[in-house]
Length: 163
Image (cartoon, rainbow, N blue to C red; front, side, top):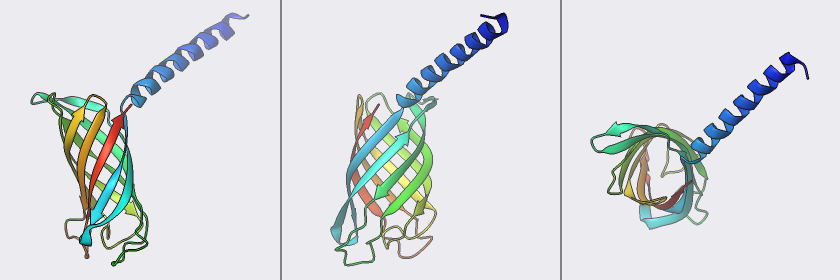
């Protein structure tokens, strides 16, 4: 084996090991959730979510995380309102977690799809909940803050698992 080939092979092996370590660390910060969402008239529908939550910094006894994620709210075919489209929301923001388990967060996102509940960009996402190890129970609300009408919003309860 030639000397340049061994040097390139060694560099490639180091890069591969670093990529594996990075992907394992990144995967450890992924959260997957599912639950139910309610809007006007207590109409309910399933919702699923995924987020990447890399740690940013310690803050006032807790930890601030960046939150980059997506949520999918299934349309309601039997809705009394115009809520029959599926809506997918891509968002970014911050999440704060206390050692006691309390979780709070806020973000902003853009959507694909339109309903009376989620009627235009931007959408604001607020989160409050509790975390026990890898499991979280989150109450979340999505609304456009009356920037567009109608502004029914979606209020959801999600169970989430962090990998």
